[in-house]
Amino acid sequence: MLSFIKLMTQGSLPDPSLFSSALSSEDDVATALDTIRQDFNFRHYMVLSMPAQGFRDLGSNIMLTSWPDEAVKAYDDGGLVRSSAILDRLRRSALPFRYTTQMENRKRRDGTYPVAMGLFRDMAVQRGAFFPVHASNGERGAISFGGDRDDVTNEELMQLNSIAHFLFNELCEIRKTHRMEAGSLSRRETECLHWAAAGKTSTEMASILNLSEYTVNHYLNRATRKLDAVNRVHAVAKALRAGFIST
Image 1 (cartoon, rainbow, N blue to C red):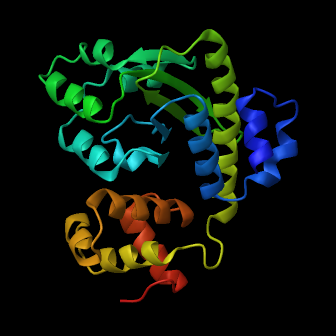
Image 2 (cartoon, one colour; image 1 turned 90 degrees about the vertical axis):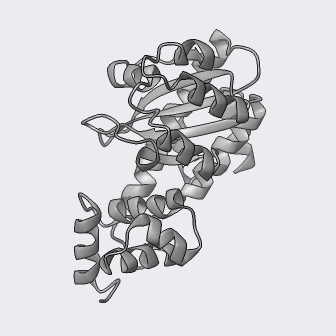
């Protein structure tokens, strides 16, 4: 695993298929992303799934991230998705691009500029880069790296773009492989589905399970994908039929 990550950060991926066995779980992909984040002197990374109809909130579209739960919640509570120039650009572009938080947030026209700048200031994210990616199964997404380091160079942009495409495809393949496997639902995912079946809201579940609301939604979204369901209600119905939970 470590030699694989070292080759990635050196931009040496002559045949990515040779390294697929090094990534057998989401945790492996998260470890690879975190190592890359550190090697390139970034503070945070994020992997997003790009929904067909656009973003309604950030939290439900996050596949993996190093952002703290409270930062994701603050982003969504502040309604920052609606006027995000970056998310709008990701819907339209397939090319990697650099960004600065000050320049991008100045484009907001709904009064959310101070909230956005305060959030990114607290996380020490001043600039970084986004990489629109797609997997062999057709799923679209984006991977970002951000922090307070200098601007990403052209060489780094090319290097990180190759790494981002490879890791996103591996992540999608891992999720496809584990979807609907017996026992693929974790204890927390099963607990959240149980309380959803009981009619509890995410806020109520967070209080019952002593988790953040974002974490509850994360578990429910993961369970929904594993069950190949279209939404939370559908996931509960499929989990009941499969015997994963009971009323």
